[in-house]
Image (cartoon, rainbow, N blue to C red; front, side, top):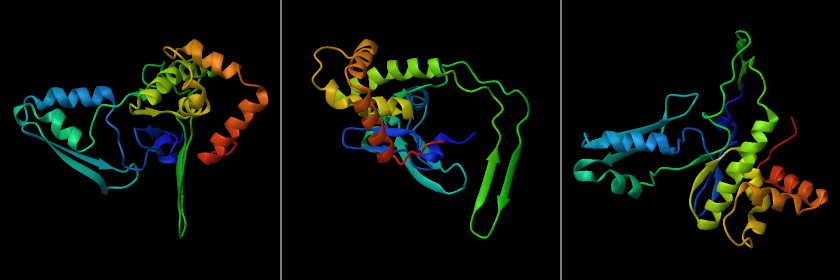
Length: 206
């Protein structure tokens, strides 16, 4: 199993840019932010330090002033805010391993290569598709409103494929809207947009 964050397959969309989440970067998803906000009522300061997945170096750190109800203001001044996560996530059924997988690594003069065998069943394609459609509608709405979010690869692809068309849609964007916009394109146009997305994010065929 490959860490998707390390491969850059999670994207951060904010009011200015769309970019991959970098090593050591951890957007505060809504549940984590809410836990910090709850803890802040009994604290004067919160120190957040962000480490990479494969090293012990601090890549970023912030000190949040919690005294006198300043948590939200202090966090916001340092670009720390609750951000929605869109895509297949912890709410989905867990994957159970069929057996203990192999873990190996090799070291040469320049590289360290890891092998972590995945023994769980593949994600249900239908479940993945339905979540992408549902959260794709949320992503398009937030993009239109200029609000930030983090998206998995399928959700980001739908968002970028349909963003220009969604701008001209009147009313709320729903799952039905996403399907309608997708099916309004010819197969050739859909394939071209997928190819452009893959080229932009340097995604190769498995």
